[in-house]
Amino acid sequence: MSWGTELWDQFDNLEKHTQWGIDILEKYIKFVKERTEIELSYAKQLRNLAKKYQPKKNSKEEEEYRYTACKAFLSTLNEMNDYAGQHEVISENMTSSITVELARYVQELKQERKSYFHDGRKAQQHIEICWKQLESSKRRFERDCKEADRAQQYFEKMDADINVTKADVEKARQQAQVRHQMAEDSKADYSSILQKFNHEQHEYYHTHIPNIFQKIQEMEERRIVRIGESMKTYAEVDRQVIPIIGKCLDEIVKAAESIDQKNDSQLVIEAYKSGFEPPGDIEFEDYTQPMKRTVSDNSLSNSRGEGKPELKFGGKAKGKLWPFIKKNKGATPEDFSNLPPEQRRKKLQQKVDELNKEIQKEMDQRDAITKMKDVYLKNPQMGDPASLDHKLTEVSQNIEKLRLEAQKFEAWLAEVEGRLPARSEQARRQSGMFDAQNPATVNSCAQDRESSPDGSYTEEQSQEGEGKVLATDFDDEFDEEEPLPAIGTCKALYTFEGQNEGTISVVEGETLYVIEEDKGDGWTRIRRNEDEEGYVPTSYVEVYLDKNAKGAKTYI
Image 1 (cartoon, rainbow, N blue to C red):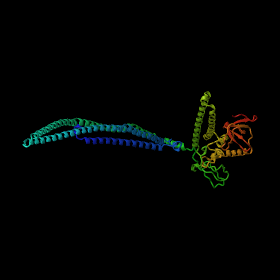
Image 2: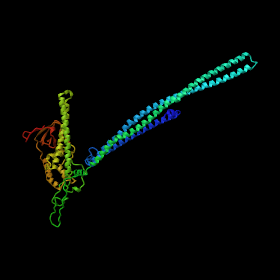
Image 3: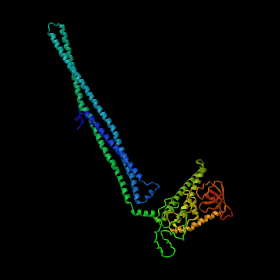
Image 4: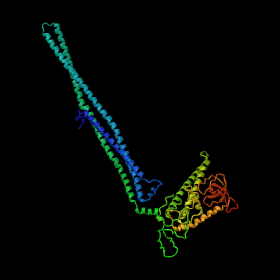
């Protein structure tokens, strides 16, 4: 089976067929290219979908992912990212292995096809030229034969006429001989050209065209094989990612099987357990007895009868109605006193841990700056050591502030856990005066808690704190009437902006009176005049206590 022998006269049809084959190949390339675009689009949509449902950092959603069901969902989202990645791999492999390779092959195929059909047209033109030469020699031979016949007839006519001179007869005879010779020459030429044409025609139909058509057939068969191989590659690219996609699906199943409903139920208990005991039975109040009604400690409400005045600290103290009262929607107190004991303990512990991390971070930064300063001291060409003093001071001040903040929350945490019986004056002063994040907290947190409108604490707790609150108010009034005497002086080393209530602003180099020493909380109480006094960080001032003062020390 050969196109050269079977299709020797179908040059034009073969040209159309091979062009159609190239068109089919280009159509397949376009199909694969569109498939790669779909894969990329699908992968992008999958990634956007997974990103859309990812929990936002530092949000309530992130806390929800403690539950095993939410963890499984998060694992599913992560696996969807990997799943999308495999579709991107499909697109990349199809582009490199099929689209790019076939596009290059099509260009080569077009050049090869063009070359073969150019050779075929050249052979056609040559045989056509030979045919025209043959026709021309044939017509010339035919014309010369006719001229020779006419000249012979004219000679015979002149020779038979007695009236014609001998010279005219001789002339006609010579003319007939010339024409006859011309006819013989044309005959020989025609015979030669005919033999040559037959040879060229034989070569054309039995050698040149079969060879050209055979090459075209081989070219077309290679095209067919190539498109078949590309289709196999198309399937292999998909098959290669099936194991990885299977692993993604297996991980999703594994995550689903890891869901533990009992564990999630325990997490709910830990998240919402208040630590309160359920209310006890309500005692029977006998109105038939002419005696003063009393209220049981286990009552769910406070009596409005006589004998017990209501304390007012910004609001009425609530009793045990906390389970049935809506939560206060105002600002959350700094010490989380609006929360039940167990939840408050968890929040305070979390805050302490965060502050400790920040302190450690600042300490690491201070150590790094100190090391850099030592390097500058040993190698002055690397930098000026004095340029780091300001940064070192700033970091030290940040560490001091964070430590005070941590002490404040540790005191509240100790109180909740029962390590401290009540809030100390030191903790009250820290929480009420030196919190830069929440300067609105002025009264003691014990007062805020007992007067909290959400009824988070029991009646016994409110009663326990009444005497302490009254005593604090009494001491404050006494302090206003009897100012503390000065026990020394101090000089401000740095400027301090006392923006919180209870603090006082000082300017670097200013001299003031000391009326209360640092009690270990990092703050010293000073006075500018009779009307201006407050607390400043001890590290900001140089203190000079009177020698006669009790426990006189110098703090720098």
